[in-house]
Image 1 (cartoon, helix red, strand yellow):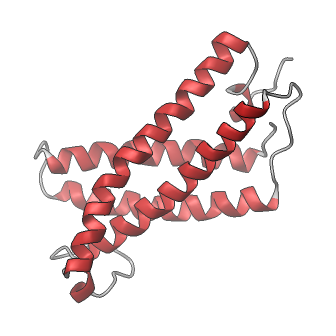
Image 2 (image 1 turned 30 degrees about the horizontal axis):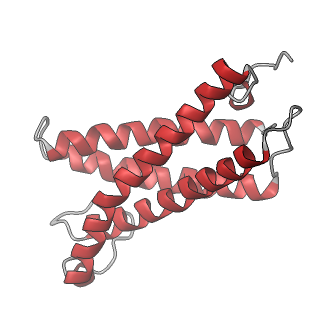
Image 3 (image 1 turned 90 degrees about the vertical axis):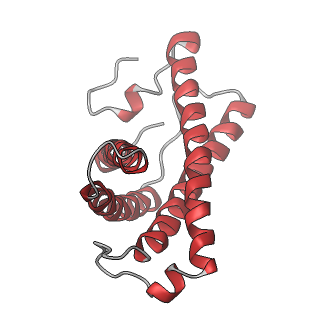
Length: 170
């Protein structure tokens, strides 16, 4: 596949912000840092919302072109399923996290949802869904990385170079 520079940048920005979110989420959960960690987590989440929206717009405006070396049909189907799963899970993760964060005493959100909803049984469901989705997102991410490594070292094709800004050598 070939991607635009914007798609490549949004891909790596998504990864970088997700790493910040994982680290701040863990730091908050396990009391590694003070309570301000949740505020950083909320800020990172809002940045991620902007990045994901921009990424989706870039993706729909410029669909990726097929790879020079076609993959096995099953691999192509699996790649589409994993990529769709990553997008769907990431969007659901952001929505559930935003609603859950709205229930905090002092949410640092641009437009928090109604605290009555966020602190209700429905809000608790969103929080639980957020915690569950992180494992699904992690599993999809692991499959994605394993597939990239398989293509790089087993098939010796270029999926990783498709997501870098350096010129490709075929």
